[in-house]
Length: 143
Image 1 (cartoon, one colour):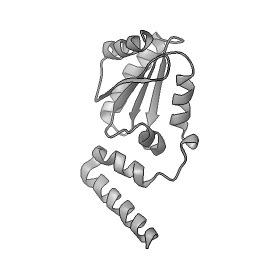
Image 2 (cartoon, rainbow, N blue to C red):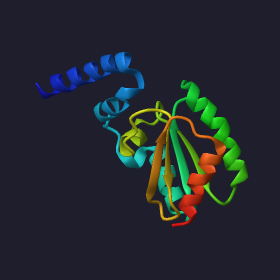
Image 3 (tube, rainbow, N blue to C red):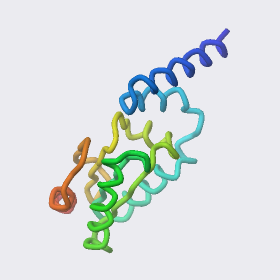
């Protein structure tokens, strides 16, 4: 009986995903939560970034998302500009559902800023300019 309920929930979440698109990411992540957090490459990267003592931006998106692809160009520029001073991570949530669940990502692209101690200091949904990304990273240094 329980297995049937789980299967129905997964079927429902897939249907909801087709109807709602990105808005159902959190529901899908909850239904596919069989993988422990330690096996998530995105979670591991974020843990390593938190231990680095540098401010971090993590962008949660997908290769199929137009805004995410546009943000990747900006984040690549920021990564070059801040090499050795900040961490710039791009996590494809279609390949790493566990990371999206762990960080409660509901839409994409979502950028999450962390300070030098690994504490989340802000998040944004949608596109950001290079200046806005640099500003968020500077706020992470100031703490």
